[in-house]
Each structure stands twice: as C-alpha cells, then as structure tokens.
Amino acid sequence: MKFKKISIIGVPMDLGQTRRGVDMGPSAIRYAGIVERLERLSYEIEDLGDIEIDRAERSDEENIGNLRNLKAVAEANERLAAKVDQVIQSGTFPLVLGGDHSIAIGSLAGIGKHYLNLGVIWYDAHGDLNTAETSPSGNIHGMPLAVSLGIGDPRLTNIANYTPKVKPENIVMIGARSLDEGERKLIKEKGIQVFTMHEIDRLGMAKVMENAISYLQKRGTDGVHLSLDLDGLDPHDAPGVGTPVIGGISYRESHLAMEMLSEAGMITSCEFVEVNPILDEKNKTANVAVALMGSLFGEKLL
Ligand SMILES: NC(=[NH2+])NCCC[C@H](N)C(=O)O
Ligand SMILES: [Mn+2]
Ligand SMILES: [Mn+2]
Image 1 (tube, helix red, strand yellow):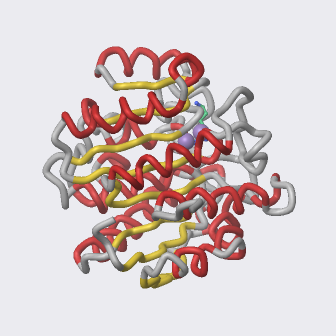
Image 2 (spheres, rainbow, N blue to C red):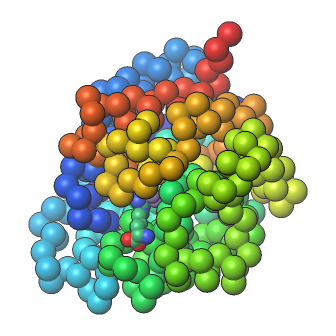
C-alpha cells in the first residue's frame, strides 16, 4: 500500500432501503476495533466522524417516482462526495463505512474525478444495477452501480456535477447470485466483467481473484475502488445484513480475496457497507468487516 495515512468516514445511511438499523453500521464497525486494528499495521488513522443524514426527510412525500427518499439520499451523497474528494486531495486513503450501499454513489462521485481510468471491484450478492424503471423495490441501495455508470435519475447521476464516474469495462463484480432482469440485461449490454458464485465454485476464489486482478491491470487502471457489501458473504458468516442471500462467499474465501488485493497493491479507496447491528449476532458481521479490512490493509498470518 502506497498510503501511510487512512481517513475513516462514517455514513449512517439507512434511507436507501427499508430495514432499520443499518445506520448503526459505522458505530458497530468502530466498536469492533477498526482504528486499533489498522494502527497495529502502523498506519496513521484519522477518524473524520460521520456524514450528516437528514432524518427529517424521511416521509412518504420523499418517494419520488420509484425512488425512495431520493432527496435525502442525494443530499447525503453530495456531502460524502465532497468529504471523499477532500481526503483524496490531502493524499490519504479514504475508508468509508456504511450505511446502506446507496452511499457508493457519493464515494465514487468523490473518487472518480481523481482518476483517468478508475477500476471498481463490486463485491456483492447483488448487482446494484437497477434504475427507477427496473427496480423491484424502489430502494436506492439497489442502484448505486448503475448510477455511477451514469444510468438513472440525473439527481443521482449528476452528484458532484459530472457523469459518469466509472466506465463499464473497468468494473469487476464478484459474488453475484441475485440479479434482477434489468440488471442481467445491463450487464450483457455493457459487457461488465462478472464473477458470479458459479465461477467462484468452479474455479475457486484464488483463480477468480487472479483473473479479476489481471483484468483490471490489463485495463490500465490508475486506481481501484473496492466496494464491499457484507451480503456478498454467506449469511452464515455475515448474518447482520438487510438483504441476505444464501450460497455466498465464505469468510475464508473473503480473507483470501482481501489478501490477494493487498499483495496486488492496487486498491486506492474502499467502502464496507450494509452492516446492520440490529439484524446481527453479537456484532459478528462488524467483526468480520474489521477482520477483512485487516487483511486488505496488509495483515499477515505469519
Ligand atoms: N446493496 C444491496 N444490498 N442491494 C440489494 C438490492 C436488492 C434488489 N436487487 C433491489 O433492487 O431492491
Ligand atoms: Mn448486496
Ligand atoms: Mn450492494
């Protein structure tokens, strides 16, 4: 890792979906010891606290078309984008803690303008490639990857005043096993590189990560953002998530993935999202998130 300093940004966002409690994700991850864990790896850690979420906006009038809480989600993401932008400008590594996955809109908006050819690894059971038209739920946490490609409502795609934030050919999805019809269509149309659970079963995680890493290297990326949704893991290992899908990536496979990304030295920003302490078992999912961050930032077994 070329960074010496990591800046932590909490985003207590729960308006991108309907399960209560995911707003407590940043607290749960801090309580699980993220600062101490990374300090042990001799990084300088700066905790910037939490982005403000406008709770008063939570009302039915805020559901614009099929976009739940659009205004509050857009505003919080503008604030997050500005904060992430600042962190990158100061030369430190942005580590964003969610909150539901709608916050990836703001993270990528803050990151995208700093790279000519940004790569994105989307570690998730889902595609998060819906639009208001294709979404079965109206939940914006199912849309951030589409939004970052410039597809969707302009109030979301134009956050930080530019679009798109990332090119489809620079995205690698890992762990997908629950894709909606419109998402499948978009993946094919845009030629997005996806390693579904089928490829993970068939090739093993080591080979999948080798392929994912060399794919992004061949694309000539000058930075890679890791967007890790804890529901990418199997619910047995990460039960504290709002939209669990059985048959996921194991704890061990996830560690291997993080270790391989660490060795590749390619990750330049990341977010860990969808930790919901209310749905969790004794903070297990937050602890898993912190353990994975340990591996991502260079912890070794020996
Ligand atoms: N970030 C997430 N957990 N997304 C789940 C999305 C589920 C479903 N595809 C939807 O659009 O509602
Ligand atoms: Mn998901
Ligand atoms: Mn997601």
